[in-house]
Image (cartoon, rainbow, N blue to C red; front, side, top):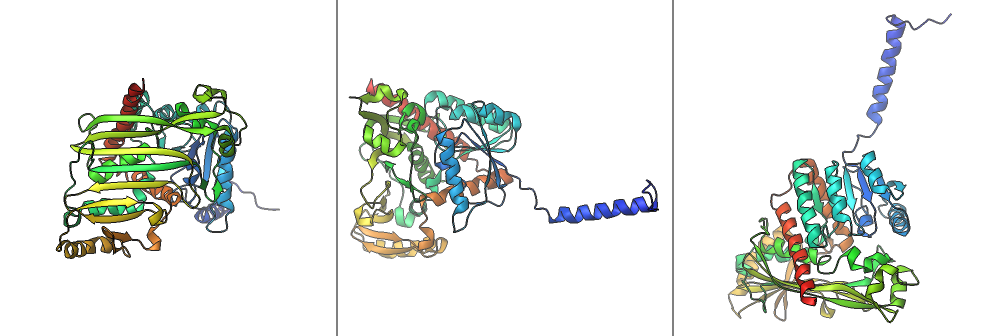
Length: 464
């Protein structure tokens, strides 16, 4: 007869001990629980997928997706699948999807993750941000977080909720990781090379940033399919509040490094304007795959075949006594061999720092140092001071150019735009883990969204 396992008997104690030892051994083989669980909310923009182009040590591989269903969701999942299936450094994401009209309420109720990723239709984005924070979620949001003055008021409330609930709200500022912009900022902090930032005037600003974008483009090697709502400024936001967010952010980040901007007293907008890019029905079909214009675009269509998109804008403003100009232009398609371009100039008392991306630069961003005066002592001065830059960024070198010097980059620093999403995510994860977001970040997020939404308000009044 087999012995009975009676509580308190030697057999029972031995059996329980064996089970506990085995459980302990099995548990030690299980991977440690990762602290960050992503939720992707209504992904309609390709940036939502680019956040997952890399894997991260602190992020669990299971991502919870909540969306209304439809083509936007399908395109997002296709992009994630392509990253999982690629031959070089494939990702290992597992997407758990809920599709239904009550997707947002379902997300709030189920609480399956702790970080909400937002990159899609901007019409309700600020509302999603605010309510996600109210329900205990951290938020990692693509720009823009607000597309009008009403949205800016909600965003102010969202930052208050985040602070009160000890949560993190952060936007995806990829352009801070473009190496030529990083070096422009570094050089501007070197008085021996740059001197001091000029004050500038309305007609000749101290800092100018211009961005040219294209509706037809390639992302991750494929022609980008745009959702039709992307061409509706009431859903995507006008250019003056969309891409302009990056430029306004860089003005603050470069002119006043690590300093907080108070939008209530540091910013004065002198002028703002907006204008349209026209798109034919055949061009619309080419990038959306849709044969006709949706009804919500009706008020922006002429002759049944031409869509007017208010996606371009310019802001002239004064920030802490410095005159700045930012502008965004959207064209349909870039000439063959080119793409989106960026131009930037910071005017200093000793030299101008200029980023150009034209034909001469093979349409790649190149940073130039252009002295103000023909001073024979400047060459020895720049060589001495540039040593600090090359020590901090190994491989960066100076070459003579027509107006001064160009800054040459080693291959390992010349990352593309898509790689910058992982850089921003790593910053976010550090701030989330260590509770060490810089003190200037939140006031400066508020300052840039005040600038863009106030500029839109002014531009709309000027058009009426």
